[in-house]
Length: 181
Image 1 (tube, one colour):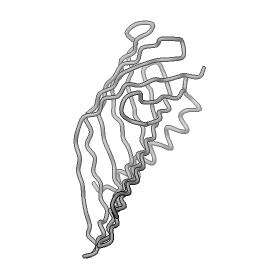
Image 2: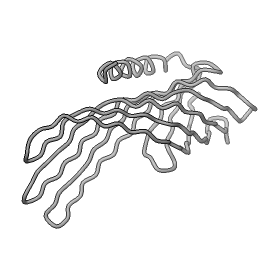
Image 3: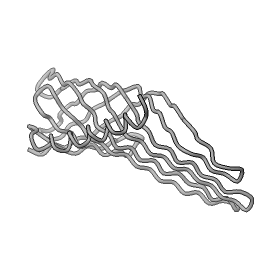
Image 4: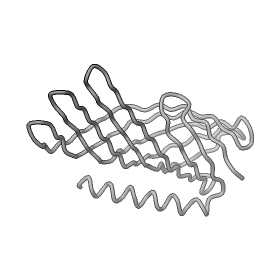
């Protein structure tokens, strides 16, 4: 299947998540407390099913000794999880996160200019736990293994090139979530 197919499927999933929020038992907002800056919107559809749209964005600009460079990265996604309550305060969950990814890089100096633009998808099976420290506030941990595929173009002083990048790796997150009742 092509990257475009996955991007369309992820967009459809995001629309589903946003409309499902109206039917959920609980919904909330969450943030990463460790390395990332993602914002999560958890929705408990039932006691055992939850969805979690999320957004992550980073921008960077560097200027030094006649060189200017920068990068932008955006990730829009949603997780679908099966949850299992282990006690009044503890819930375990497992499922998959799917995301649309867009990245842009650029540089310029007195002798050359270049840029890369890619977009694609990320698939990440994940499992985690959520511990409620208050009725509406939880802390939790999550671990996952991701596969990311990006396609795009690279432009420099010698021409324009098609490119494809594939990444795999692990993600670990420490999360704080607040639920509205």
